[in-house]
Image (cartoon, rainbow, N blue to C red):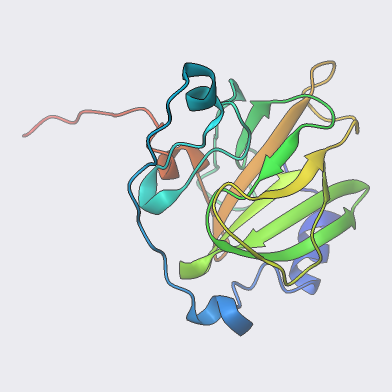
Length: 188
């Protein structure tokens, strides 16, 4: 997704581009726990598997990546700021990490949901209609909304766009799930 100037301006006006944390989230800490053993194979596929510091997929079961992240070197250059995950209309969207709902509304013609996480990270999702009020604390894997039937750049397929920001810098969400490709560099 390449954010339009209207979307960027609206997010900044809403305080989402500033990396500000207040309230309970400002004092929150990330707890890393071991995965809970699951008995049935089907339940195992549905259970969110923890990644970096407990991050989990925002969709269950683990979705197919339709389009990987291709963050530009400079903010104003074209690129894909996040990942597109294959989804279905009405599918539950889950918080990938502990945090609080920071924004859930239509923005620049799209249904957008933002979760602010400890450490200055923010997850953005679209097209998603939120199921919790702004300010609600959320746990990893907790349902935060539903994928809508809005037209996206994935048409005719349905996808969930998931972006992660640290301040104004876009990160590859798959890195937080330990799913990014490993690139070996020469020792010289």
